[in-house]
Length: 125
Image (cartoon, rainbow, N blue to C red; front, side, top):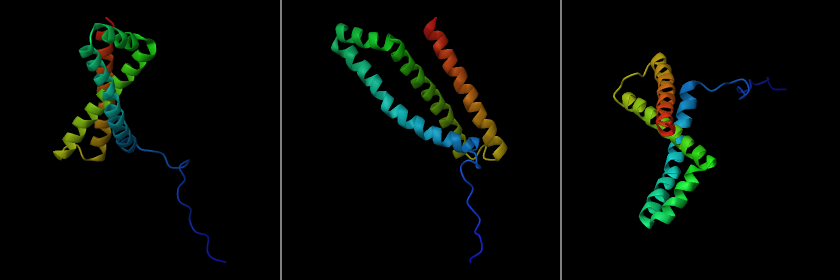
């Protein structure tokens, strides 16, 4: 009988760290932004097509489901933008220590939240 071999840590034991979660979510947000840009194209095409088509698209975006999609798009947009600035700092060699990585990660989340809050406060007023 061979010796028992150690088992790899299972996902139920191992937990994702903030940098890993933010790296994965940055990639996902990039995909969402690329596909969500189609909404901007639809809006611009409707604007160019005339007042009837533009009114239809505006009505769709004004619907609660349309508002939810626009809200989600703005969350992804601000998160991806803030995290992109963070990556630019890393490209310059700044903030590469683990404490700095965690601080900048929390800063991205807080600043992104504040930007979304500011945008939707301005939109709804």
